Length: 448
Image (cartoon, rainbow, N blue to C red; front, side, top):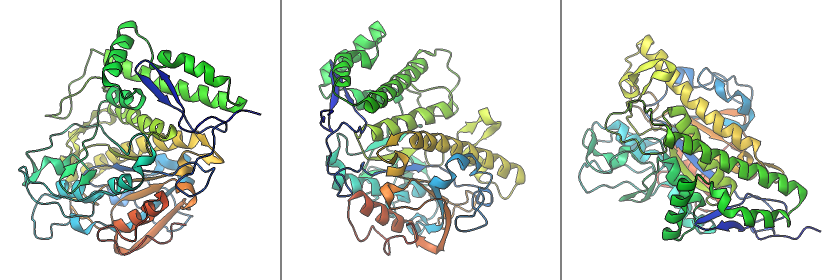
C-alpha cells in the first residue's frame, strides 16, 4: 500500500520551495466544502477595460441552447463550462452626482460595489473587494491569502481620470477602503514568489546562482523530487512529472522574455516595461494566466484577480490589425469601422481567456478538473464604452465551483440585478459565509 504523504508537502532546496498539486497519495484534508476528500474551491476575477461591443457579445437566446456570438466564439472548446450572465449591474459605478470619471469608477467599483471617493490626492476610499473579503475569511488555509496579477503597470497616486486617483484605474482588489492590493505584472517576480522559500537572503542568492549557472529552480529541489517519487503511486508519478514539466516550461518562457534584447517599442505611453515581460501582449497574458493556474494547482492560493489591462487603457493592438488606442476607439459614436475594431479587441481578450480555461480543464483533479473546482468571473465594469453605462454588464462565469454551478447556459436576469448578488453566492461556496455584500439583495438565483 502506498504511504500517504501530507497535503502540504513541499519540494525544498536552497532558496526554493515548490508546492505540489493534489495527488491520490496525499492524506485527506478538510476542504472548504466540509468534506474530507474533495479538492478545494477557488475563485478568480478577470477584468477587461473600456466595455465591450454588446451586440456581438450577448447571445440572442437564453438557456442551454444558445449560440456563441462572434466575440464568444473562441470559447467553443469550453462552451459547456461557461455561463453568460446578462442583466447584472454595479450601481455605484454610475456617477450618482460625482460627474465624469466613468473608467476609474468602473474599476474601483467592479469587485467592491462601493462608490469610490472622487479624489486624486492622498485621500482615496473605495471598499473591501470580494476577493479580499474571501481572503480575510479563508486565506489562512494557503501559503498566500490571494494573488493579484496584471499586465500593465500603473501609478498608485496622481490624476488618471477626470479627478479620480490612478489608484482606482489601476486596481480592482482592495484590502480595505483605503488600501488597494497592488498587482504584479512581472512574470519573473510572480514565479519567484510562488516557488521561492521565505528566507529572503537565501531566495535572492538562489536566484543569482540560478541565473549565473543557467540552472532551473527544479535543479535545487531534485533530491526531494527523487525521494518523493519513491513514495507515491504510479499515477502520481505521472502527475508529478507533468506538473514539474509545466513549471519548467514556464520558467523557460520567462527566461526567453528576459533574454530578448530586441525589444519593440512599448505601445502604452507612460508604462515602464519590467524585465521578464514578453514583447507580445498575448504571450504576456497567457504567461500570467499560467502563473495563476500553477498557484491554484499547487494550492498556494485559492483566490486571484487578474487585470488584463488597466481601466481606460489606450493600448493599441497592432498584432491584430488595430493601430488605434483601445480607449479612443471605445468612444465609437456608433461608427461601424470603430465598432469592428472594438470587436477584434474584445475577441482577442476572449481568446486569451479561452486558453486559460482550456488549460485548467486539461488538469485532472480528483473526479474532475481544476476548472470544475474553480469559479472565474470575466468581465468589464462598463457595458458600452461609448455610453459608459454600468447596467447590463458583460459578465461571464466559468467553472463549476466544486459543484455549485451548472454551466453551459445564457441566463438573463432582470435589469439592475446587483452584480454583488453573484459575489454572495461565490463567497458562500468558498466558505466565506455571508448573507450580503454591499448593495446585494441576496444570492444570485438559477446558478445551480
